[in-house]
Each structure stands twice: as structure tokens, then as C-alpha cells.
Image (cartoon, rainbow, N blue to C red; front, side, top):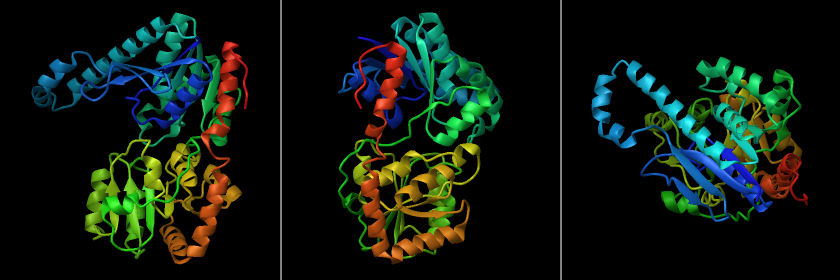
Amino acid sequence: MTRIAMLVWNEFRNDARVLKQAQTLQSAGYQVTVFALHTPGITCQKETLADGTQVIRVARRPLWRWRSAKAQQSRGASATGKPMSVLRVLARVWTHIGLVTRIAWHRATVIHAHDVNTLPSAWLAARLSGAKLVYDAHEISTSREGYGRYRQWVARVERTLMPRTDGNITTTETRAKFFARAYAIARPLVLQNRPRLSSSPPTQRIRHELGLVQPWPIIVYQGGLQQGRGLERLLRVAASVRDAYFVLIGGGNLCGPLLALRDELGLAERVHFIPVVPLADLPSYTASADIGVQPIEHTCLNHFTTDSNKLFEYVIAGLPVIATDFPEIRRIVKAHDIGLLVPAGDDLQLRAALRHLLDDPVLRRRYAGNTRIAARYLNWEQQEPELVTLYYRLTGMGQVHP
């Protein structure tokens, strides 16, 4: 059986995009192994998923138990941050060496790098083992929130290695155009972050889990609680949008500040948080809301070119949407008439759009009906033949049936 090695720089516990690609290729007759990061006590070093996909994890750093036992002393000894910075660099190098070694020995036909932080290791492993290389650029990391210090490094890596891959993939048409122009390569294959098509009848899961007693509509945001997502703005707008619940599902470095802001605004009754939920459970949470919001801000090119998982998740769940008027988002919302668009960073327009949908249940039902029609097209299954076709071209294996 032809082997595919996928490389991710996470624990591979909630990475929907990587999981769907692995499942697609596994069902197409390939043996897929995902190489990921291992955290002792949290993840298994080796496991086989239900569909036969194998997962091999490499520890983030050497001497894990020794470091855990000495953690308290290390904190005191590294108050300046410099010793720990050196240790982090060494630990990351150790992990990359471990991943390269394991992948090279795996003798895969194709190595598939997910995002730029895995590309150098995947390229080296491909050179050592004679494998072909596919690069999936999930983001534009040269202009990405929180990546300011690494932009020049990222640009050098992508400029050097993207022309040397056997195939490139990204997530939106705008990003594909960017990569083609920036690095003088053929336009990458576009595979949007669409969920699998599933039946998502309305549920009461959020209402029951949070004990919501009022019959108010539920406005949901799901995804990372991070900078640039417009979440502080959403909470401030929520203060003046009464008779509605706001529920944020996910985790991230803004969780604490957002909780504090909610309490400061006196919104504890109407604004609620649900931590990260398993991917399999997420659709039932989404389908228990009435409106999906995506108030992302124009802080970088990466945001401006996104469409994002959550927009498609709202569509699959049958929710009308209120989203920022960016090109890729506009294309989806306008083409399928599934909601309202608001200018980036405009509190008044966001408030007006929320109020408009809350006050017009007939319009909400119309948009909801349109999302259920759109879901027939905006799902992962519609894209699977393109991924399989790419791999057929690289491996010469099998026939592709759409």
C-alpha cells in the first residue's frame, strides 16, 4: 500500500483540516500516517484511528520527566527569560530532528507538510528518503496575527521551498493568487476549510447546558479566542443588544481578558463561554444557536484573505450569518444569500446587523433556509476528488471517481 506521511506541529487532537485530508486519502487506498507532537499524560505516542489512519507522536522536548520535576527550580533560575529561550530553541530543534528521522525511516511515497512550521523538516525528510513533497499553506504566515517576529524567516522558507515542492495547497482563491505572485509558482490547489456534510437538525444543547431560561435567540461565535477576531468589540456591542444570548465556544489567550470584560460590562447573564469541545460534538452545539457571527478584524493580510472554518460550520448547521465584509467571506455570503455583511471594525454596523436579524424572524428563517441549500455545495465531500486527483498525479495510483 502506498504510504503518505503527514506532518503537523500540534498534538493532532482537534485539527479538522488535517483529519479530513487524512480520511480522504485513506479511503482512496493510501496508508496515511500523521506525525504530530506528543505530550506525556495527554496524548498517546502511537494510535490507529477508526478509518485506519495511523498517528505517531514525538515528544516536544527531551528529558520530559526530569524537566517536569525541576520546573519550579527552572522558573526561578530563568527569571530573565534568556536561559529558557535557549532551552526552547534546543527543545524545538530536538523535536524537529526526531520528526525528520522518523518520517525519513517511514519511507513514504509522499510527505505532506501542514503549514510553514513543518515545511523545512518535511523537505529534509523528503530529500533523505526520496519522497515527493506536498505543502499545505493553511495561512499567509508572512502577514499573520502574532507572527511579526517570524515574517522574514517565513518568507525565506516559503520562497526557497515552495518552488521545490511537487504540489502546493492553500485555503482560498485570494491566498492562492498571493502565493503564486509572491513566489513565482503555479497557483496552489484550493481546498477550503469546509466541514463534512452532516445532518444538523436544531437542538437545545447550548440552552440546556448553560441553563438559559429566557426564550431569547442565541448568537454564537466559535473558534479561537484570539486577537484580531473582533471579540472584544462583539462583547461591547452585546451590551447594547438586549434580549439575546451571546455564546463563545473555544479557547485561546483572550479567554481571561474576555471573561473580565464581560463582568466589567455586567453581561454575565447574557454572555457565556463554553471551552473547546470535541470536533464530533461541535455540530450539535452550532445547531442549537440561532445566528452565527464572524466579526474578524482587518489586522493583517491573512485575516483579509480568509473565509475560515466557522463560516462553513454555520452553513452546515443551518445558521444565518453576520460576518465581516472581506472578499472571500463576501463571495460566499452573497452567492448563497445567507446573511449580512458588515465593514471591519464598525461597531454601529455590527450592532445594526445584529438588531436587524434579531427583530426579523422571517428574514432569519429565509437565510437559514438558504444555508441549508448552500450546505449541499459548501462541504468537504465536494472537494475530495481534487485532493485525490493531486495524489493520483504524484503517485500514479488508482483511478479517481468524483
